[in-house]
Image (cartoon, rainbow, N blue to C red; front, side):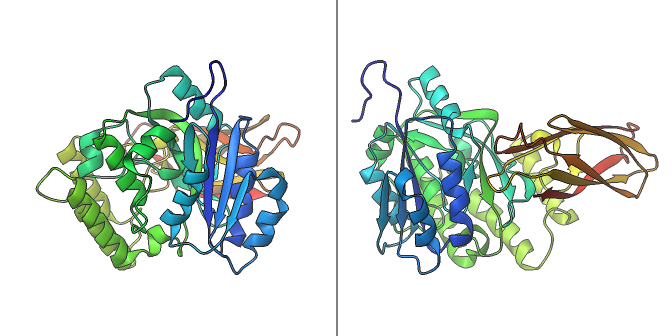
Length: 384
């Protein structure tokens, strides 16, 4: 059992597993090193990459506490290697294509300090593409519910999680034979062991990159089988609801249908929410599976590249009347009229002297209250 001395701050051990992720891992490393919490132990476990990953890691050797470069038996095995070397009271892993918001660690530590009985905390997540451009927010997140976790869905986004080392050791870290669902299985085992979870509501913690070759998207049949396996192992209901839901969504995606705009898919989601008595979630004012925004919305994501000089947002008005949109970023504040059926591009300058690794655009729009009236977000661009 690792317990810090009286009145000593908690150490947080973060593990990054990697294999051939040269285009992304530098952003991951920067996001850990940029944290505003000083008591971090950082461990990078590379499985013998053959691309430029080792060279990227080497550039930061003097700021990484432990580097392991050797073949492993997969992602779970690599993470477990790091966990076994870790000396922190709190653990986390951040994959080499994901990354943190600058205040992620200090936010998690504060939650554990406020509630010493907690075992795991998790928060909100942003999806970006390969280039780090905003796509959407993870909308399945919700306050902890053991029954839903075991039976219906993994509503906890892995890169937003931090947990006590004692709890992780108690359930045995990750199962290395799992390739797609090791995180969900880990949460389920912690929940069944009686661990206490807390959702840090309206708190952005991490970014999950979404692109065609990620395991989550490209997993196919292998991922389906693992979801079914874990659902049957941990679920308490007769039907494996999580596996069924995934199979429907994956079948639609594989037929080349855009889930965010496909009417039948939206109808299925509405039926599911009705059956489960779930509320429609519009995280930060942006519709979960579409580009529609509410009257107040926010686009927020970390940025660890060159300081951007501007953020551009394209807005499109639907309905029979015009709308007025107000957008703000740093000290910049722009108001623009958007005509029905037309698209308007709004450019917001970024104040370099204020920039602290976060792009944060807040917007609102005024228009008639009829149901046909809505504003849509088409494009988010960051200029450097």
